[in-house]
Image 1 (tube, rainbow, N blue to C red):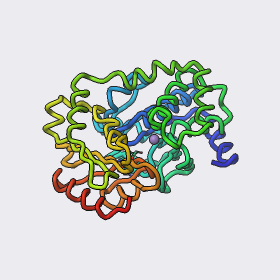
Image 2: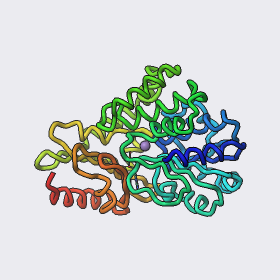
Image 3: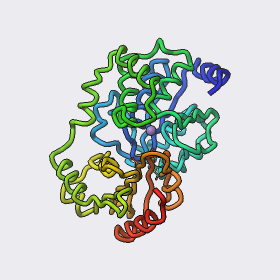
Image 4: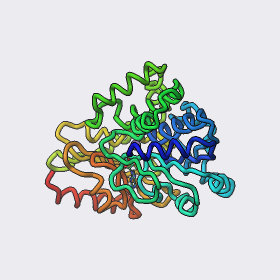
Length: 334
Ligand code: 5GP
Ligand code: MN
């Protein structure tokens, strides 16, 4: 984002506007943290800002300040679409292509509003008037902090905005462990804590709010973990009936894919999770080092993401999906 673009956006924001803020479908901690940070920031500037999530967000993010005001598009399509049509500005956060919002894509594509994208995924689509896209950042929340700095509005930062930003930095960095974490990330986090973020409490709200059944589901996932020949790739499967057995709730499988990657020597891990309602298998891919799971997910599983974390889907059965995956892995030189 150039200095001139920040000046133009400041000029736009000089007059109160109706502003919609959109995360990707099945929003995670970074998507919810960044949209809610922006929501509090813009409302404090005197705008009428609102967050519209394409579908429900997981329970482990319900503690985020402002989450109860989030509109859910798929629950109330007509009335939410009518609200979106009134927006002067639309912020799209933590995604790079409108189709990442699912069905809501068609409503967004028709809007006359001015779009601003803030995102850290590769290969952003060109739909926004202002595109702040940079894959060097570990989270969109870190970019929202820089965006507020670019607008010269640190004066508006408060504990609430800082807490939302902190949430996305924590969740997208695996609690500060991924290589995308820089000294600058820690400097920003230091500032957020100075602004009053109860950092210990945030970690506990995110990670210590599991149900008993979800921990048993994790146990099942670990039993299902397969280490492929050569020891460099691993995968986990969870069928719909296994999810049902442990009373699966949205968010219960968050982070399980990383257990494959925690085996010594494994550089590529996947999880395949059946979703009977949507008639598909959701895939998540994680890697260490140079193996690009964004390209793998795009080429073979109709998805995308980042070099070391990506997702996709399969419309085949679980066994066909796994068969395809194992075949593809056998051709890789990991
Ligand atoms: P997860 O595996 O946690 O769902 O997602 C990992 C990363 O890949 C996230 O940055 C997410 O936004 C991205 N991602 C997940 N699923 C898809 C997908 O179906 N398409 C694309 N383009 N990106 C995805
Ligand atoms: Mn993100």
